[in-house]
Image (cartoon, rainbow, N blue to C red; front, side):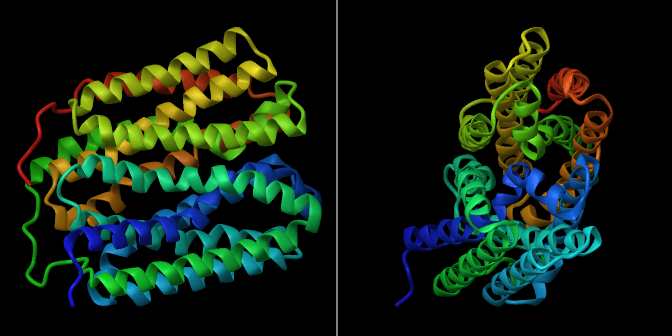
Length: 390
């Protein structure tokens, strides 16, 4: 007997949860920085590069996803994401050189995560019609939620078992989550793309509006990914001990996850530009506070505010795609828009690692983040306030 619509919605959200939580540990990468550097004899610039490489391949997977799910059934595609991601983590666990680790974690793990991320977003947007902002906010919150759960778990596992065993265990979890997601998608019989070709958006939407959303997302993500990639290192640099650094990473990713849900929820009720301006001002206030009152505990609160600003923008961006473009096009537009996320990961997080290797601190990087958030608020003011028909 066919499932009810509410049951299919539950399956779509469940599949998104099972697939994205393990891959979301990418945002907990900072708790493994010292273990990776010690094992491979590398510096902070190298680990920043690996994180940046993972975001590049994740974005490549996002862009490719909309083409893949038009020709490959979604259930086996979800399973394939798990196989690819788990293979990458196993390869990283066994890596004997920086190049091997970068190939496993930075390439294979990133590709599997990217295809899966768009796949489940498309599934949710094909099923959920009412309160789509809240649903999109929830889906994009799963990465920081995965990091919130993963940060203390990865740190404890690394202390008890070592880096290799920790990455191997994460590989098994990722494969299991994708297997469950495949089962739920198949059970709900979710079609990711209509049989007939969907109408393309007008060139105007592909141009000016897309460019503004792209710029908004890039500016917020550059500051936010600085926090997500190096939060533990930043707290340590401002005088925090190891326990505070791990606890801060957990707290920050949790705050970011809540902000992503909130960003989607707010766009169901308020105009996108109002939410976007407020998000950037929240992040700016955090960066300014840390610049004025540097210290371990202030750094935790400040980084949480910067992360939340990015979280609000991430949630509202996904919701804005659903508002401004036809739903069958969600995956295609989102995949292209997330290029901004990739570009952001290759800018401030990498620059911050380079500055840290030369100065031993993050003060300059925090000031750069503040400038980016001011620019983001100015861009947000030019977004259209009214919904468009979809």
